[in-house]
Image (cartoon, rainbow, N blue to C red; front, side, top):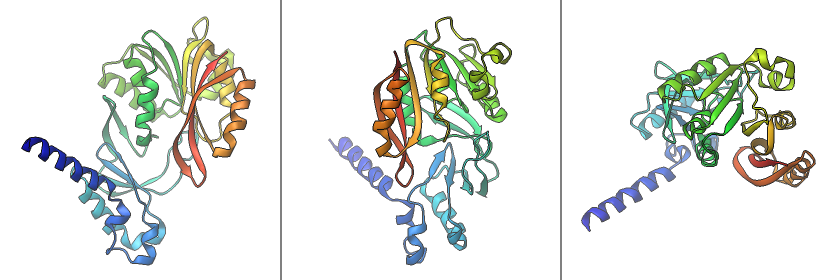
Length: 295
């Protein structure tokens, strides 16, 4: 009984700590008028903390970094994100506020990912969503993953016994993806293609040269973590999916746009089996995922 009580107490204490935001932790350190500018949360990628500190808090950056380092004992570095995702590689600019390197090993859903956070795009907040999609993958499926990044959708699919074609334009991300396949003993399950997914899939004459093999009846499934503003890419990808196949499509929309979007997908011959909000990205704008079936 004592052991159970002790375990329950530790759980309560951990839950309490998880409820304490960075803003709460900075009370008494940052003057009250500026406190609302402190981000409530930040991300961990491996042993690296990633935060966006507003310029108005420049005088408090050192105090913020020290507080972040105190919140989790194994934090090796702190990065300050100073720009949004930019360029075709979808990489932001970061300042290294603490530590010597932005290289890390990130563990998620049973897989290990090696990356340099400053050179690739990785969103740790989608871990549950990636597990949800992986749970639907069947052994033997052929799966297409454009915008593959370092492999967070790729590795779990390959781990389920699928054969995956992964397309990524960022050469640094491709290097990491290949290394992650090796680390997780999944070589031979994934074809990694470095190139512009839009060009590769929208120009059928380039397929052979780019190394993409399309199954005779089309892919069984596509997982598309679509960058902002590329919604039109869905129609292009659907041409490569077999009838009855699945598409997991991510888009950025306000809630009021969803009904119209569902009607648009129907016109494309896609049945909406399921959809959900998968995180907020701006005031009123959320990331949404749609599980679509090609009719």
